[in-house]
Length: 475
Image (cartoon, rainbow, N blue to C red; front, side, top):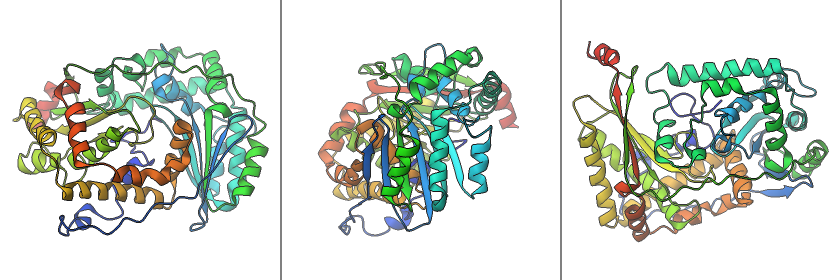
C-alpha cells in the first residue's frame, strides 16, 4: 500500500521524526543562548558489497537486540510508472504478496507471523520497498524467502484480478470516500509540477488500474524487479560474513535484467505562483495547502532547507505553529515537511516539494493565512537568524537522526541505508549526515529562503467544504 500521513504514517524515518528521543519542550528548556555540549558523532557500522548480477548488499551488524531487519528496495516508484497505467507501481506492490515459486499465496506473511515478526511494504516516489523484522536466528530463512519472490513471483490472472479490486477499494476508502482524502499529498504534486512523471495521480485512475493486463504485470516484473535494480539491507544481530554467504547463495543465482532507461524527471524553475480551488464534498471545514520546490538534493542549500523546515514547520516551537496556531488561532495544528507525508528528507531521488497544510475555521480567509505565512517567510529572507535559533534547529536535526538510528526495530535505519545505496551508491553517507547539518550558516539560511521561498516558487490549494458537510458542521 502507498503509506501516507493521515492514514498509515510511514515507519521509514517519517514516523520516528515525530517522536523524538527527547521531547522538544524538555530538550530546549534551557537557555537557548547557552552553548550546547558537543554532539556525539554518529557511527553506524556499514559493509557494502555488490554481487555479480548487480544486487547491492548493505550489512549493518548490531547485537544489542536479537532481531534482524531485512529490507529489499527496488528502484521503481510511482514517479516513473508507465504512462496510461497510473497506479501501476502501487498495484505491483500488492502483487508481491500473492505468492512465489516456493511460497503460496499469503504464505510469506504467515511465515513472518509464525516467527513472531512484523512486515510491511510501501510504494514511494522512487522506490518500492519490502521489509520484515524477525528473530535473528531466522535470518537465513527470510533471505531465502525474499530471494524466492524476486526470482519467481506467481503472476496469474486470478491474482491480478484480485489485487486490482483490492487497490481500487483502497483508493475508494483512502481518497474518494473520506474527508480531505488525498489532500494535499496527492493534489499538490499535480499542481506544482510540470513534468507528467512528477505530476500525475500516484494512487492511479480506477480505469487505468482496471486496464492493466497480465502481460503488463509480467513485463513490469521482468524489467524492474531484478537484482540490478535492487538493494538488500540486513541490519541487526548477524555475522556479516555469514550474511554475504547467504546473499550469494540465494540472490546471486538470479539473472540481471537489461539496463533500465530512466525517463527525464527534471522540473523547470517555477516563475509564477500557481493557485487553484478544490471543493471537498465531505470536508467539514476549509483547509489551505501550500508547497515550494526545494533545492537539488545534496547541495548546501538543500541542507539549509532541511533546517528551515525544522524552524518553520516542525514542533510546538516552530514559527508557523507559534503564529498560525498559538497567536492567530487559525487552526489547531500545522502539518507538513519535505517529501511529506510519504517519506523524509533523504529517501527520494529527484525534484521534491516542501509542503504544508492547515485545516482552519470558516471565519478566516485563505488570503489572511497566506499573508501571515508571507510575513514569517519575509523575516527569514530579510534578517539573519540568531545563533541560538540555528543551534536549536541543528539540535532538532540531530535528535531526529539519533532517534532513527537508535530505534529498536531498525526500520528507519534500513530505510536510510537502502536509500543511500540505491540513489547515491554510498550507504556510508549515513555517517556524514551530522557534518552536513553542522555546515549550515545563518547566511546560507537567508540565501536559501530568498531563492526557494519566493511567492513565484509556490503552489497553493484552497479547499472548500461541500455544502452538506458545511451545513452538518454548523449544526
